[in-house]
Length: 127
Image (cartoon, rainbow, N blue to C red; front, top):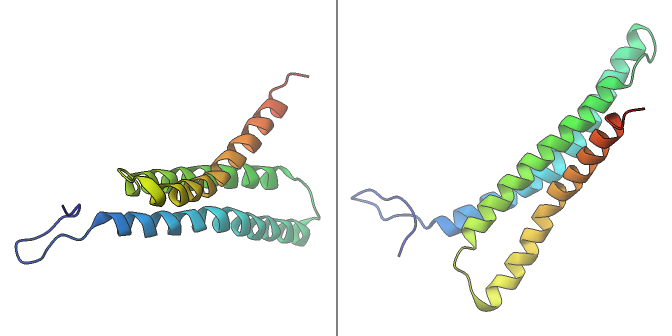
């Protein structure tokens, strides 16, 4: 049984390989984009602050780190959902490598949630 959409003249494309490769692409973006994007934005903000008046405030950098964590969480969750749909119904030997891949996809999600929870606790601890 094919899992895709087809037209009367063309057969349906199987969705499993499409979901698998798209989940891998989203997972790579979840690892790369928040890391290098945040570094680039923080360096650009620091250069702008130095050009104007010297380093004045680190709050934009903290905000960018928090935003990068949220982006990593969202992209990792999307990769997990796509991979879970791609591995639906698998049994036997093919299932364990897929579960290991899902665990790797979950790392940005877990790390981002841990950092966001710690910063939330740190900012709202009530001194």
